[in-house]
Length: 42
Image (cartoon, rainbow, N blue to C red):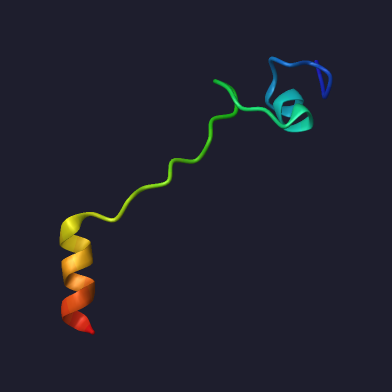
């Protein structure tokens, strides 16, 4: 259980892959309300 183990988080980092143990960060789109408020402030 280490860098060679594909099922562990450390193994995922070493293998440069993602999965249940190492999920990707979700890129959140700004909502319509946020876009409108930014335009009104400028």
